[in-house]
Length: 145
Image (cartoon, rainbow, N blue to C red; front, side, top):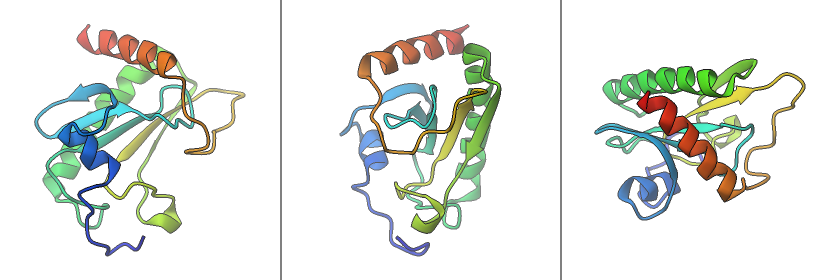
């Protein structure tokens, strides 16, 4: 998909925002939603999306939505690091298919990195739902503390 394609309101993230598709939600406010990636590259891989912006990528998202998404990304990266104790944390945002974007609703990735563990291929393997539920519970508890 090109950088100038029209927004598709049927993409999976739009469906999640509307409640038409499930997710393992770890954060939500009026403007931002964050949930665990069901095809994680690492344990704890989290996605952060704006709820009110029908933007495919960083080139067409409004600045206010981008700023709110970035603030939540920072907050959740802190929570994930505190809870999972990774050796590093990768924050990424891709624009266009050649850059690695697979869902064309702007989003940020928070990917905990553990020494000695390679980064999994995105969308190569679906996570175990029970493991995602347990991780979701841990992160929600940490957020509530």
